[in-house]
Image (cartoon, rainbow, N blue to C red):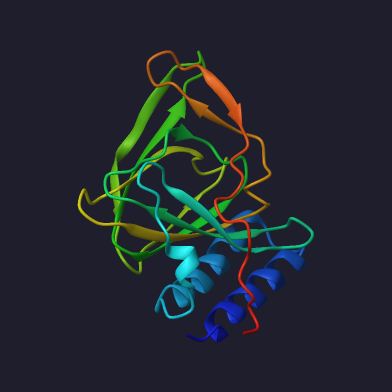
Length: 192
């Protein structure tokens, strides 16, 4: 295993975080390019960061910027697992590494009703998608497969494990705050 690909991506993401001249659309465009490079191969992702859980999807921290400007996370989806409907409150770039996931977007109407927004979107290996409060931030994501795990890599414009976010009940529109944390207790050594 080699971490050169991961180190290059983390350097790219750090440079993006340092460039205060960029607006969100420029950040998403450049971060998407770096994400595409990162997910071209999977030889950089350690075994520990590919572990699934029999009941819950896993959110493993790969790298957290020490100033909380961004975080890089592997999402490991066991067969048939899915998120609740949730938001992020920051921009994000999702890259599909292996398997596939399906996303349904939602939006909140002016009168507080949660409604589906657009069709289901499927991400396959190599695909990249973005989220943000500006372009659409509420969605539900699921593993496209009932018989195997899927892994996606997520970059967020903040420390997503520490950010106060919300989950939503589709029927009532009720919003409940949460902080996700991370599934792993130890982050990888990028310099091995």
